[in-house]
Amino acid sequence: MWKPEPIPPLNDETFRLLRDLIHDYCGIYFEESGRFLLERRLARRLSLHQLPGFRDYYLLLKYGKHRDEELAAVIDLLTTNETYFFREEAGLRAFCEEIVPELRERRKQDRTLRIWSAGCSTGEEPYTLAILLLEAGPWEEWDVEILGSDINQRVLQAARRGVYKRSAFRATEPRYLKEYFEDEGDGSFRIQDRVRRWVSFNHVNLLDPARISLVPRMDVIFCRNVSIYFDRQAKRQVVASFYQKLAEEGYLLLGHSESLINLSTDFTLRHLKHDMVYQKPFRQGVQGPMSHVQSQARSY
Image (cartoon, rainbow, N blue to C red; front, top):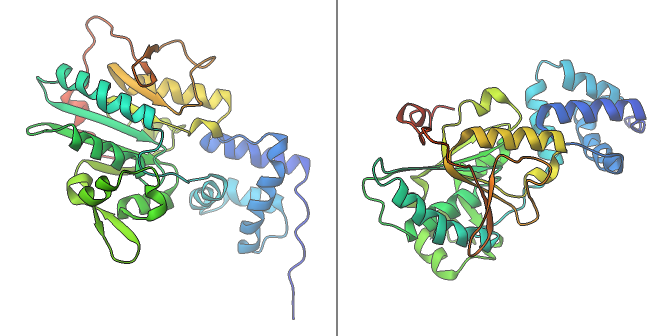
């Protein structure tokens, strides 16, 4: 029986070519210490495409007819998408107990609320935010939209499906599971339509200006535990995009181990009761989200 030849090791030159290509595409950067991880995971794609070496795979990613689909598969292999509902309680409490009441008062004239969960993975975070808003209701005559975005198409498909196993609820109070999910009877739970109605999901590469330009102005941006994959240059670019997309006095919430130190001085650090968050300062004469911008909310 014929057996394929062993794949030669990833050499220095090809490692740098692959590393830079991936970095330029999505901001993920591999130090020399991550070389073995990159080699081991990409080897699966070489076997799938029956390629003799990593240089051939680099050429496929660079010039192949289906390079975009292949790059998406690479990102799927290289990123960890583990998350769960009600993750990092301190930030969520700051959101629902302090930020939402402030925004409700500030936006009571136009009654619009725009929230972006960037790097939302399989959707637990945007659905969590929708549940917290329902708990803080009522929202009659309000136009509420929560955008969940990710670079990984596979996890976005799971997010749109909205069906989760019990492991996704390890930080969830039982009453939320009873009130906002339907038991599928096979150990999984489906998000209810009244939660889903505010949430939409779209593919957004945070380093792609064309995709970012389609995101409407936001009142709150969550980007938690996403920048850990980026080098400093990519982090600065992403933070600058968030600043542009936030309304005046809008909020940016990062993961508990993340900060804007050495990345940006544009934001004000606010020490709330439950957590520290970043806020875009108010500038006289600059308005919040405008109606013509809001109309883009579903146009990705």
